[in-house]
Amino acid sequence: MEVIRVGSVPSTQDVARRLPIGSVVVAEHQTAGRGRLDRRWEAPPGTALLASWVMPPHALASLAAGVAAAHACGKSVRLKWPNDLLLGGRKLGGILVERAADACIVGTGINLRWAPEGAAMLDQDRDQLVERMAAEMTRWFAATEDEVLAGWRERSDTLGRRVRVHLQDETFEGVAEDIAPDGCLEVAGRKVSAGDVVHLRSGSD
Image (cartoon, rainbow, N blue to C red; front, side, top):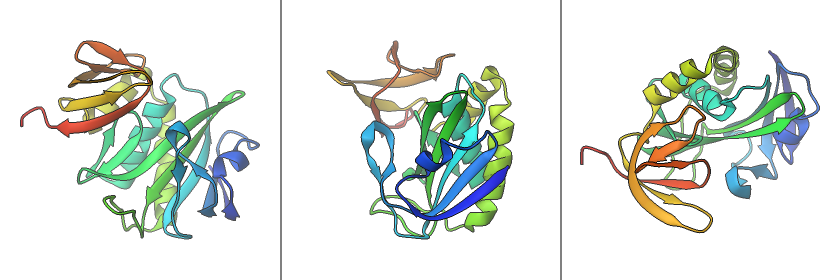
């Protein structure tokens, strides 16, 4: 995988969109980093892995990227649906997948040397993490949908928990029962395709 390193950019997603599959853009700083639902992603320069990966299309791209990132970060890192990385129950990073022509642009932001209040940081070398991520992204984007679903379930911190789901026009609670074949979260017999999911407690509490 070809690594393109940049200094300060508005967003690595914008740079990556023009590159071929197999490229990754790694930035020291983002001035307009984006998360899900148009949220900002901010971190002091040099303190996080801010990268966008140009990957081949995959039906479960967001889940595949999450599993890849979790494996690269270490055994203690878990997944919160749809695309948050957790360490010790606190947010470590996030993933944003955007479609561009015949590719998936996978933006990753992972706290390494600094974290907002209440969040977690990995305290690992960024270049070594990029190498591991490159291998895991390649592996999981080549995996079948069933393999991705199994990998996600194995790392999930959401399944079995009681959660609160915030939709555009509704909020409801229930136990997160499973991940559907299309990547939707199944909560209290309902399929959730988008929205915010808040962990309330573990299923055994």
